[in-house]
Image 1 (tube, one colour):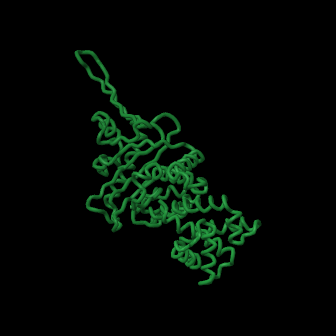
Image 2: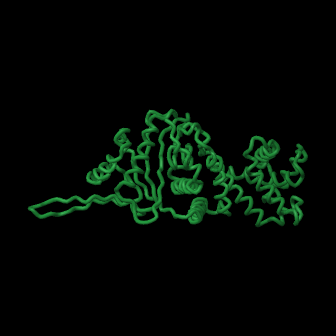
Image 3: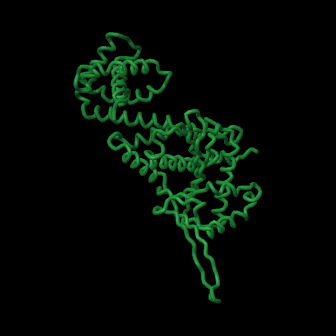
Length: 373
């Protein structure tokens, strides 16, 4: 069955920005514990608002985490029709994951999150008579900054009953046998700001906390990561059917890792350049009025190193990787000067002299970054 709603995010770019920001927040907030060194792919506005699929070495799905991310203009989320409609959509995703054709491990599982930056108040009041005296008891589970994850299966039976009672009023819940997916449902509070500008500031702060002095310009770093999402943002689901196997909707973990690597390497190169641009300029023959152009060219080189179509940049990068350990100098600018001279003595390039030097400069920092830590 074709589901036209799977392309709703393409028609609401503001919504996509929220999902993108939230996905990055989840990655950065759990970077060391869950994402650093893990093989996975990320999809946005595809099957669900946010989807992480963790993979084994053979590309089989080990686990999927989906996030239906909702904000509320006022008040908190409570058990009722609005919450029930959201939960039904979440459970439908869980059912579709079971039948999805993407190869899965024998131990495959999935978690279905309802996530929000607004408090979720799960409450049920039970009235009872004891010795003819009517009394009421309130069962409550609050999902907020102090209790950020609540698992459905661990809720009090009275709260569970209150949730299922509202779900049973939904035709889809009854007709599609979604009850079995409730065991995968989790409620998540994410301490995330509400406006795009505030969210970006929060993401920049996260980058600075995680990578400390390795990132000198967190705004430029965030913009670099955002560029990974451009193609996904503008891609329609094939035949309007959302599939895990649709690679056009995926951002791979190695793409995110490469972007972070470029960011941290660039920052080291920029810091050294800004601290020593006069010395580097003298060693490499860069005149004062050429410094801005030189900086632009070595900045671009980091991105070109990742492109298989840029043979000259690949050649220079490989040359530096092979030769930088043989440098005799004791500081960076002299090592780069050595490498430029050695390259010109042994090889040739169709790059102009300044671009060659700028590329060599970037390649040096790209190479030594592999040896850090």
